[in-house]
Length: 156
Image (cartoon, rainbow, N blue to C red; front, side, top):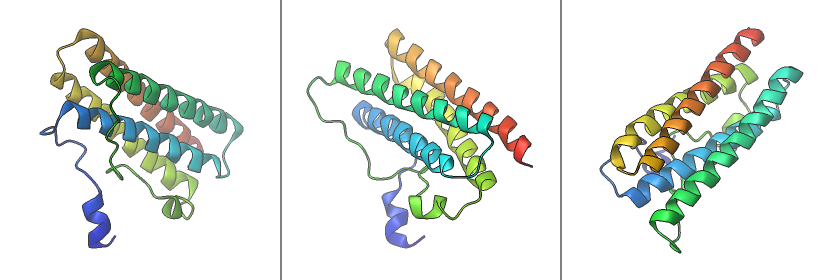
């Protein structure tokens, strides 16, 4: 990775930013996780694994919508500040060259990071509804991680 691309990524766990930016990061994370799964669907997968990955895409898109609604509650009518790139992003040109097992491991890393991010982000909000949503998202990311781990075992 060149120096310019390095600068484009953000530190997912830097919480010394505004709530607007934290929500933007969370939304970007969901977008990128869904993209990882779309890339994974282009690989040769067991039908059962394919079905789970398709379900993950739907869930990540649902998470994105819930986070967008939360952003709109806090900042009605404002544009969401989505970063260009994040620390979990796997660019398309790389994912196309990666074997299914490796891409699944990268997806597991992304899910683990997202879980930790949501658990840490809970401390940034006082509102019970937002904290509940973030806890739900963290649990969902953990579930994805565990399912991916199980599916990876089937490939090895």
